[in-house]
Length: 592
Image 1 (tube, rainbow, N blue to C red):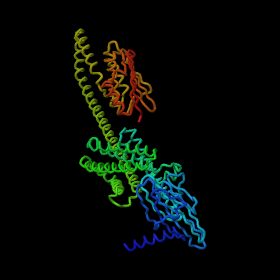
Image 2: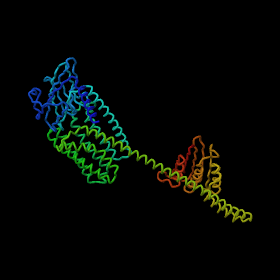
Image 3: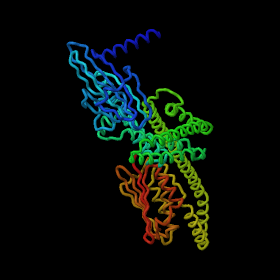
């Protein structure tokens, strides 16, 4: 199996090499000008080291070094023209100047307004006639950050294919990140939680860093911008600050580990100051001094990584799921950052790919966006479920209350029948005995007792759905015992019989409203109007009582209970009242 895989990879490399090089023969070398004193006029006199195609040239951090490349390309074919591209794999070279026969042939790089036709590399087109040989000198310079690159001669189709795939992949993932940012922006407005704000800032900086690091911004968006090298460094610093703030809030360090929280915040403030100082040095053209501030910034980054990893491990005791997620989410980035810093300080010697940070950024942004969104949706669904359960319990409670009230009123009706019936018989006996004075006294007592309990009586006719006749009977009974007040009831197209469960509640509500008008409103006239419409039943109660100011007087328990019962049947409850001008109550029950 291993032999098969090895042969497959070998054949694939051979095919790729033949396809890429065609009939072209390449011999190359390079030389390092540490003081930037060489020019194209004396470059042929310099000594060049042999260069193996694909070999990486790495001179580390510098502020004035220029690497010169000597590239001889010969078309071995005597029949066909040669057409290829001289390709440099570092997109962030400040300036790449190509000379042919001592004359300027092309300029590329971040510090220039010129861009490569391909996203994946800085490439210059080379054309050769059959048997022709050309010699190119290329000066490569990068002032800020480390300089490392390799170059090759590649066919156009390979570069175009690789470039188009990378553009499509970056655009696709940037679209997903943008949607996550928009959704979390919505969550920020809904919840007002800082966690979503820090995620948005962290995600936007990650997107910007990826666009700059992959050459997407230079290649497709802003080709005339001349400070992408600096922008990439500053965005990385701000990205670390936003990442630290996001992680601190995600793990609630201010609550559970105040010391580490303050250290991380202090490092963030210090890094921000470093950025301001380095920008000032850049404007003053003190490029040599920037290296020290960059080293200090990388050291702070290393300390922040250690603190964040330590905090995540300690958080296992507080919230295991959050801590494990943070450890797994930031593991690729922490490994990359640690290797990069150790390599930068010369502690280890490995080739740390810049794309590693880009991929880890994208991975973390997508993962955090998914988790935050999922957590909110889960919480939202749980809250909705809880609210539905609460509403259901309230509905059950209202139903239970209504049933209890119905049973109580049936009991009251029986008591009235038994007790008041005997008293009426006694009054009749007194009349027959012509004891009129004692009969009148008992009638007054009986009338008072009836008035006290009349609003609690539940007529038997309600069981047959006769709401209107039940109310008319009760109004008639109440008017007998009232002195200076009168109750009138009118119905308009309202059915005499209803097969609705709410008729018991509406009957009791009507009695409650009448009692409130008499007892609290001192009303002398109460009008009850019942309307029947094709889509709803309307109940309107109006009196000429003293009323009250709705803005100053809160609804009492009675009115609140009435409104809850009306809402239970999907109805509308409205009350209008003005001090000294009476009260109007309207209830609308839709026809289901």
